[in-house]
Image 1 (tube, rainbow, N blue to C red):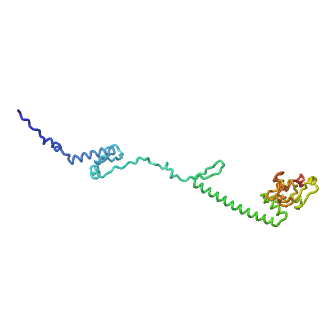
Image 2: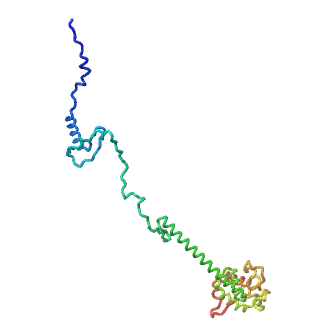
Length: 268
């Protein structure tokens, strides 16, 4: 029978080895071609990674240096992370805006600084002004009390009036009007008693500096001196003054009592 030659295992095993090798010249040509194409689309291939580069023209730009990039650079390179955060413009940076000094006006028309720090300074200034005014008022009150104490210490009609007004917490500016009423009613005599008018006829004569009847005295005397007699100068003044304010108004004290169309005093 015919002899069939055995397969050539050696040729099969070494087929790959007999493939034509890529020459250095062919590699350089391929690199030039790749670089040229990459330049057109913004990509340069360096073997291990692709670096995307922006291009300004659509024409192919051959790069003589692209093929000269050593393979060591490609092996040591790394892919740079891409920042996907939106670019911040100066228009949306709120923290860099200048401090607002706009003055807000409320319903009362009073302006207040819009910035919290400026508002705090403004409030602190107002509090300081209020504190200074309180100290000034306290000083004025102390001076007035010292003046009244001096009048009271001297005694007499002016002293009694000053003390009565202070007990009733009324301004001392009413003193001249009260004194005018007293002089018209009793002549400044704290023990004066009216024995001839209608009240006396009813058995309730008017008494004291302001000539009050007993029932009026008990109803209008200031509580702090209610334990005193009707002829006590200070107690009598408080009762007479409080009655006149309740019956005729406080203006009666300023004018020094009631009067007719001729300007003549009318008893109350």
